[in-house]
Length: 366
Ligand code: BGC
Image (tube, rainbow, N blue to C red; front, side, top):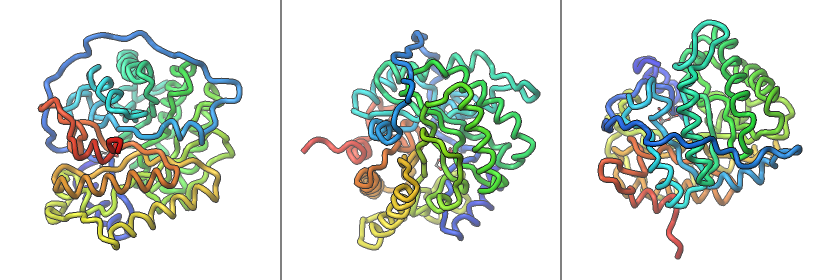
């Protein structure tokens, strides 16, 4: 999506107090050296899905505390947004004590534009490498379709291609262990309205179920996976679904100075002190999500939350800690946005964790 379009959307979304958190062209991130992977690990499916599959609530507990490997495989080409995945990243994530990674992937940039919309074999190999790096370290993996910008603008035109991408992805990973979860689409928005999304989502689930009858699949609501969107989310009766929401509120705090959020320079200096009105706003939002989950018997995954690096570090750490703990108290799993770019919990140039954020996510044992 063009920055200008994103800007218009931002204003609309801000006015309606919903969360906008994706689907934009990215501005400068600190470029990393382009380092090709040092080794190609062998595919590591360890255990197959059982005949009854894995209970989504149990799996959600194991999904626990995760991190998004953002700005890598969902860039137009890996490396263009400053992040090229390295084996050491998976080791760092495991050693730090995370349970899972979410891997955002722009499949749409690596597949033919005409039927049968074949995904490039070399791209599959690269994604396999990343998935296996995680699984072989006992990290659960949420693999999604991310930044399919065209489908947000012209859903009808891209329906067939989207379903063909899922048919290929699902078939490719059908023998992988249950620790690999699929997520249908990051942050549906724009012309992919709630109605359009609900029907596309049903078809995508059908395509996935042809080859993966019981794998847990993550689905989120329209309107950028916002909590407000949950009320309009519909999908077929399916026992193996985990529902996701993204949380970036207050947006003027978490996205201050973000190059892709028009007008966000005016928000620079916004702090988050953890006052009672600030904390109550968060708990009210998460209570609404939890109530929806309870009423609909669905496990909930906060698949993205984070505050951009232009906010002050104390506020970022306070907000991150508060949101993570509140999610946990309500039985939600989560994945921080993101590992080593603009929101980074890890600083790749210093080869060091961003300690305040890491400790907010994974508090040291008392
Ligand atoms: C988008 C990213 C963005 C983040 C926070 C994600 O869903 O894919 O591009 O940085 O949300 O806005």
